[in-house]
Image (cartoon, rainbow, N blue to C red; front, side, top):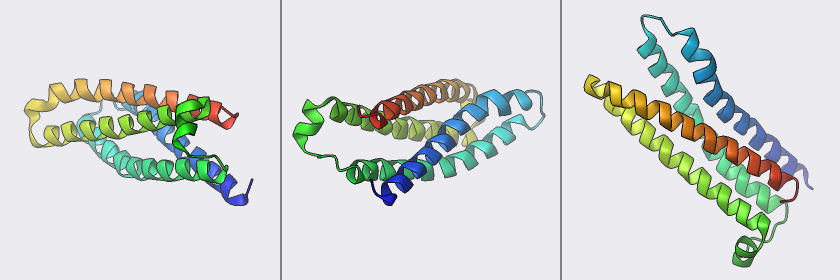
Length: 154
């Protein structure tokens, strides 16, 4: 394997760590810490916006490094490979899950924007935020598990 492959894998792991770490930090550390804080909503919004900014950058890097990892590993990327091999099936599954993360994140952000504009959406947004966050975490952990399987040869 080339040095570039190891750099790409390293960057991929760093980005996965950032993504999963942030998703676990919010409900496990931040929310309990500011539970009774008078500016809780503002703190959550500011934290969410900051994480969103870096989160989308990380997702972009994950897409680039994911494709790069396949290329640098020397994997045949033919239609037959994706359809007939277990490894190819797992790559397709991971890509579909990745697209679902993008879709759910965009949907979550659209609801956050509505909440910022209209307090009437506040109750609905809390429910959407909780469930979309849980779903994103579940999908992300599933993708990490698939990544482990792929890294061990599929």
